[in-house]
Image (cartoon, rainbow, N blue to C red):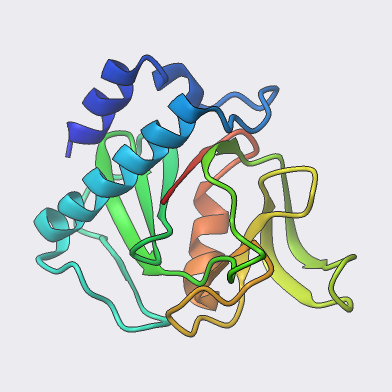
Length: 182
């Protein structure tokens, strides 16, 4: 599972994937490639850690048998519709997601968590509830609990199963990096 840290270091973008609350989103071609590589590596780490690379919509796996004390990092695979939580070099959890539908695409790159609110309501979309909201950019893209049909269906946010969103919210901080890869 150290493959992800090695890939980030080799890309020269390791600093971008480390907590940095003052840094904003990085959507350069290099950041997008780093995030895509991280998503690919995370899928392999999932098979190693959990013995599977498939989850049904709305489901997640969370390891309790490991010392998960390292810095948190979230990796999103838009292709696989999965979110991965790392603590240091260790994959701790994986969950299904629902990302942006066509025309409302979820952006790719490296995004620090900019703001956290236990309950937020969308300003853009009819006051829609966004429990366990973790904002990724100034345009409203966030990680949050929501309907998880197993396919892209959001307005650009990354929807997570409710119980996973609550647990993830507890282990991340403002500045935690989120790598979103295609």
